[in-house]
Image 1 (cartoon, helix red, strand yellow):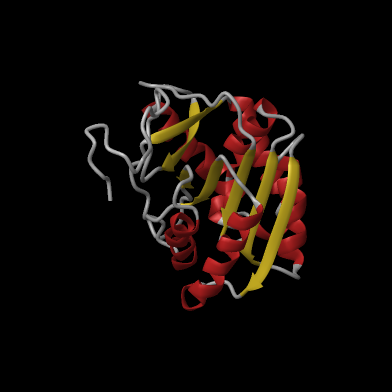
Image 2: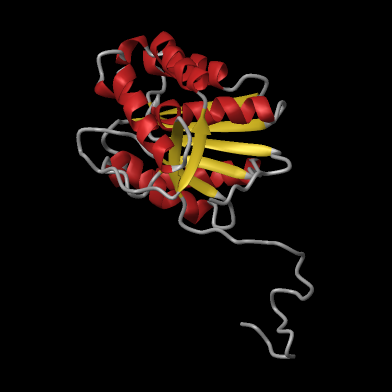
Length: 230
């Protein structure tokens, strides 16, 4: 099993359709990432929940899940469950994020997610960020739409426990939801851990990676055989 580790990480974008999507999908990875790369610039954009208790919860939670990071959070007030007919607004917000940020990594919903809000966001992220590394996190839900991922982020048991504790602490309005049940979180994390030979793990979907083992010696528009590339 191949492991790839970035030498540096200057910026990260976190994208969620709803408040709590980010930490449910990749909260453990986020904790590990921020501790491994202190001072990283993190831009978080959430499309629903603005102006409500949910926004307060989200801001406090992301601050707790991004220790030592330089964090900027935007929570919009689009109506939950109605992002598909508002896809143009979603696209503009993502394009604005692209203008002001240069993330080396984007953590966003997966295109395979069964929830329409998350799916439309996932489909528009690579449109706004065509040349960036985008990892699609997974969320267990009643739609039963989990697919087999191919990228894993191993978590030690204390990190998983910390993730669960912080979620329960900061999202009081959501504690009765199945996705906030400690057993459901640990069960999925244990399954993904088995699949990557770790105790626990979070998993991601990735649609495109470019392997760069050496710098290119010719421009992307010039063929090494003297032919034009176009």
